[in-house]
Length: 385
Image 1 (cartoon, rainbow, N blue to C red):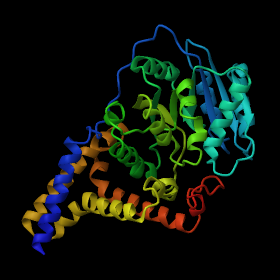
Image 2: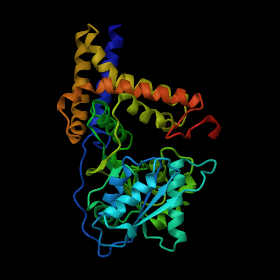
Image 3: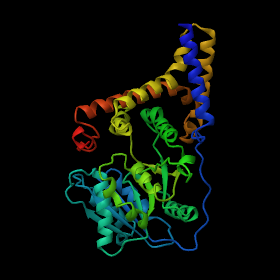
Image 4: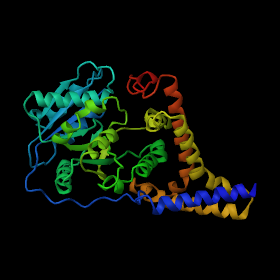
């Protein structure tokens, strides 16, 4: 048994050495310096899908209409069959800001088979712009629960022009106020960056592609070239699907933002569980083998190090302790990025156990025909395969 413990400890330590040094330094939440202002600012239209977002959409729309963007800019809110007065709240926010002329509210048509709700709403917003003859040079796809700083669009457009690419996206800073958020949210960003190292996403030579749906600026030409959202209409992880399609023919850039904030609250641990479970099995392509590999990988990488401390084998205990120290060291920058105490860093094994459980539950929900549940819609079922 001692040999098993030693092998497990050595494997865990090797994994963390690789993650720290060989995966694009994903664990460092670097904020890129501002890009220089372009000679000409492209015209932009923000497209905001909203389904029952009355609690947050007013603040989000207000921040969009407060953009100090030098170029032509407008906002389209697509009301995706809301029953809580989302559209009225958005209009009231625009009136209060004195920018009612900049906001167009579009009612989404009936969701067609094979489309995810969010992508259909986004496509409806693009359609409305094109039919009005006001199609911009760039679309800014953003969610109804995001608060943008006044210079947010200016920074995105400058980055797009400076990189010469087709798409720029920002991972927004998520809320970390409730216990559930402080416990679980920094790891969500940490795991995302581990799967899609930002440095690799931004490297044109690598195939790694990802985006964050809270803030995506894309050239209209590139959007049309890939076939628009119709080409990925059933994707639940729509931001990464869009990034893959664009990077296959061009260049993309993914960054991290301190100032663009998510307004979405997760007051209970169950809320985060549901958020993770909604798409976790989709990320694994609904493969039982990938699911088994993911759970095993989480166990070896995150759970084995602390458990080895009770193995009774001094060398295995030392290897486990070293792996746990490296794990905590890697997680610490993301914890501090979210302005939390460093004491949360060593808790990552328990957090990983939670994510493993939510991933397993995601597979169960999919098998029961309840996958991808979001605001009354079941969007990830076996019938859709």
